[in-house]
Image (cartoon, rainbow, N blue to C red; front, side, top):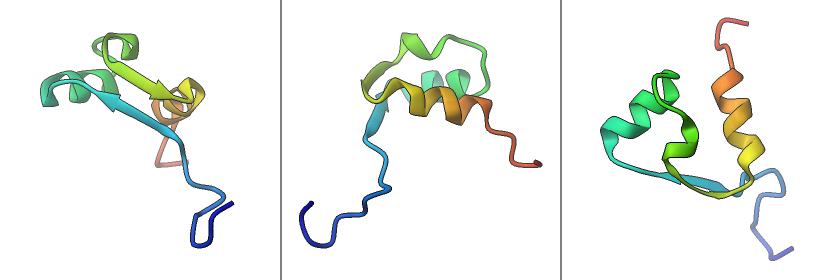
Length: 53
């Protein structure tokens, strides 16, 4: 691993319009409608995350 690289850093990205990103995060459109790169399971974790827990 290169020096200074975080071993716990996520390796994923999602691309779409601002509207598409917000709608996907609120579960109003499928996340698969975005352009996803990297580890898909990270998006599943993000969508299932409850900040109140």
